[in-house]
Amino acid sequence: MKKFKRLLFREFFLSFKNTNSLIISFLFFLLGISIFILSIGNSYITALNIGSSIIWVLFIFTLLLSIEQFFIKDYLDGSLKELVLLGFTSDLIIITKTITIWVFLIFPLLLFFPFVGVMLGIKLKEIIILLTAIFISSPSLILISIIGTLVTIQSNSSKIMLTILILPFIIPILIFGVGSIEIFFESTKPFQNFFILIGIFLITLPLTIFTGRLAFKEFTN
Image (cartoon, rainbow, N blue to C red):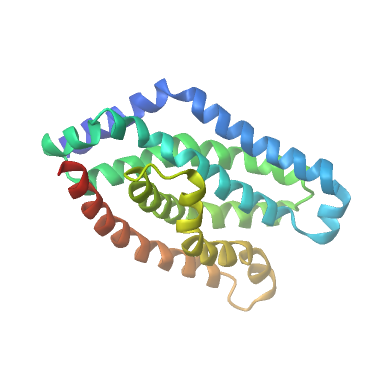
């Protein structure tokens, strides 16, 4: 438990020092929303009922573009290898990274969503379902992104390669996440998609832990 607290404090401290990159991520998300509104038009977005889909897509791309910043410095200066040598397991490192990413990136974005939803003409009830779906899905998205980051960071691959690598794993989450609003209001089993998203997380967590162990073995060799 002491190791977990020490490592979590370290990650929080480093994230506080790296707020500029996080601000850029938030600006990217807001800029993307603004571009959609200006190019398509708020009335068309409301008529086509694609506001929630726009938020989902931009949320995922914001995560993919930002996830590397939580690893790249530690990898380049050898901190990841040193943490393992100091007795911190790869499982513990991945869990603390996941918590840090959620606190410093996902949670602030969730606070933006109600305002963005109003801008896109999404109804209040739909915004609540959207927030719930993204809240449930966000740990799985972070873990999948971590897998891609650990694989591509060693080969100096670009973020485009990261996106291509993990996109097939993200598509099911996107499908069930976007469809959660329609299912909730029209199905006799309104929480069906939420349970599926939780199930995806239960699959993603051990898969990420296993992949992380293999990746950290490469770091320490």
